[in-house]
Amino acid sequence: MEAMVLYGFWRSVRASRFFNFTNRAYNIMTKPETILVLDFGSQYSQLIARRIRECNVYSRIVPFRIAAEEIRKEAPVGIILSGGPASVYQDGAPHCDPAILELGLPILGICYGMQMIVQTLGGKVARGKAREYGKAEVESTAESPLFAGVPGKTQVWMSHGDKVTELPRGFKPFASTSNTEFAGIQNPERSIYGIQFHPEVAHTPCGQQILSNFCRLVCQCEGNWNMISFIESAVREIREKTQGEKVILGLSGGVDSSVAAALIHKAIGDKLTCIFVNNGVLRKGEAEQVHELFGGAFHIPLKYVDATDRFLDKLANVTEPEKKRKIIGHEFIEVFDEAASEIKDVKFLAQGTTYPDVIESVSIDGNPSAVIKSHHNVGGLPAKMNLKLLEPLSRLFKDEVREVGRKLGLPEEMVMRQPFPGPGLAVRLIGPVNRRDLEILRNADEIIVEEMKNAGFYYKTWQTFAVFIPVKTVGVMGDERTYESVIALRAVDSRDGMTADWVKLPYELLGRISSRVVNEVDGVNRMVYDITSKPPGTIEWE
Ligand code: XMP
Image (tube, rainbow, N blue to C red; front, side):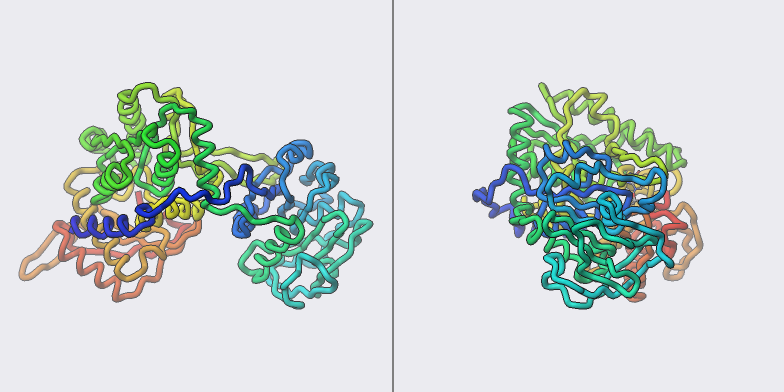
């Protein structure tokens, strides 16, 4: 079985672009055209940046408090003011530095962002008669570059309680709804635009066209942000930053650290050493796959540390999930530190930190603040090791990280891997971790993944995995009574792991998985399907 998995994995490695990736001189750029998104606390700020990047323009979220001078130094090609939950006329409502509106840069205000522009420039905003939430039809009432190629009447998504009642001098409306004559406003001489609706959400079908119009027709962007140009500039930046010094990276086998490893290796070759710690709670074949891919196909210097015994000894008799987490986290730092100390003169620790790891939306609860999160899985390492951090993916969203991985030739199985918790199978094996139950869990998990892949469901779900339940129940196999363990199947859909829905898998597939697990995995005689969403459940059982 394992050989089959490895064979499939290898076939995709060979077929992947790694083997014919060339170093063509792609449109090298020094600094990408950038549109800054000033975050006023909208739940959609990240989505706005994401959509702008889909227009091949780099976009970054900044707190609304950013000074005009700072923006001038950064020299973006345009600015978007996000929506937000506040009312512009409330005491303490978030306002950007008014000088930003005088920088001469193209500006697009969305919902709250538009209302703030109106109020700042001398117009009026008032509480609407009714809160407008949901789909609305917007009608174009005058020419506007924002609406180029957009039908005269189109569906949009509204979410606001306030509305613009009087425009500032120099502004004219170009779109209306039955609820407001100012659904779209513009001052083309100053390149300032406002829309009351949300173009970034899927419920506004022409939203991407509108944002693209802002990028191309208003900000005059060429559109040079793509993952090939990112790789070119990241490679240059990594070389400049590391200056020939050695770098180590903790490879977990997950997408982020794998892509970071491939990217850094492209930049500095053997100056990078990856350290892969087998903590004894990995899935079946995982250690071998990482070892083969990075040490083998990619020829990246790889230090493989099999610390299974060390971890499992410490975990024996531990039931409490938080305690398991702490033990694994602490032990990982120790083992990693020991392995790293055997590599002389290392100056940098690389991490696969991504953009959502470093940015958190501004929280508007009277006290807006931008919170920077530390990378949870390797927290504590940099400080302990006194190394400089290298985080080449920190500007990328997850799907961009995957695309970089593809461009660097990582196989599809690797770039599309499902999230896997740092504490691994220890939080999927309920009760004390021991080798026998781990073996049962691994074997069941392998069958689940295989059947989900065969049925074309694996990559469509956020996570699919087995959970070992330390309960024995009676069964009958052949003529014999059995008394064995229970395996649960968990399959969930999610956008970010914060909420999740259980997946309505076809009965035939559930039946096939159950039949194979019960028949093929020694020690299991019953399988159940977890039909709990999050909330109220969590994704992992722990
Ligand atoms: P829960 O179980 O809280 O999980 O609904 C949400 C997402 O987070 C993952 N998860 C973890 N990831 N270290 C990690 O790196 C952890 O300790 C951890 N616990 C949960 C989980 O797999 C899901 O994707």
